[in-house]
Image (cartoon, rainbow, N blue to C red; front, side, top):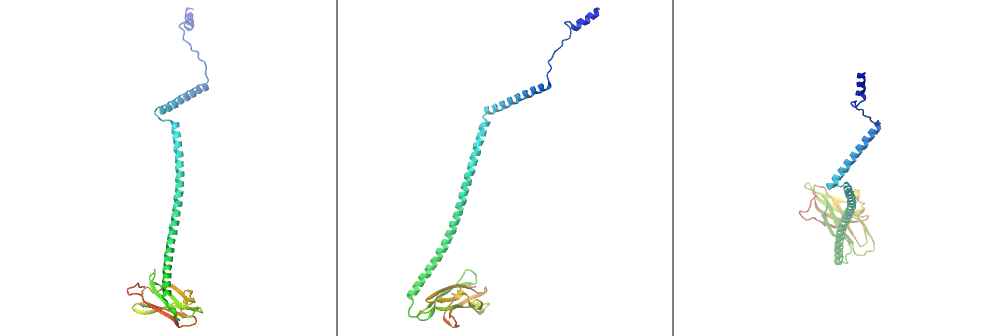
Length: 252
């Protein structure tokens, strides 16, 4: 009996073991609490990081605003660069056009100057011409080397004197004297194949200026050229004149 009493006393008495009573909490509430706690820590860390950058002189908002301003400035500069490039291209095109036009004007000016010189020479020639001549004649005949090797340019003036009540019709013939491989040779221009070429036709009442080119073989040397004026339907020359190039002149 005494032993039973001791057991009851030891179990329920002052010296009995302590029992802790806890309230049961669901697992989902525990996870929710953990997530909320982590969110608070993350937010606090972000706030501390941002506050630290502001304290150190770095403001993200100001930086983004500055970046936006820089992007706007870059876009504006690119637009201005494109506009200036377009203006430069247009100016370059205008400059090329102006240079081309200037070159053409220079060529035209030289051509007009040459024509003016020839007109002055013609005027001086006609002023000094004796009006009593009554025959067909060749004046101011000359032959000069042209641009290409073996090519020559000839110029002459055919004049009809006396009564000019009818139009002269005929053709021009050039008889070219050459030295080729140490031998003398003769070349007629135009040849039979191009005898009807309009470049050699003559048709005038008072006078006609004739100008053209001819070529000789590359290994030949020009000795002289005789110009002949043939009347239509005749093989006899109505007028002729010879030209001899100066010694030491350009060879073909």
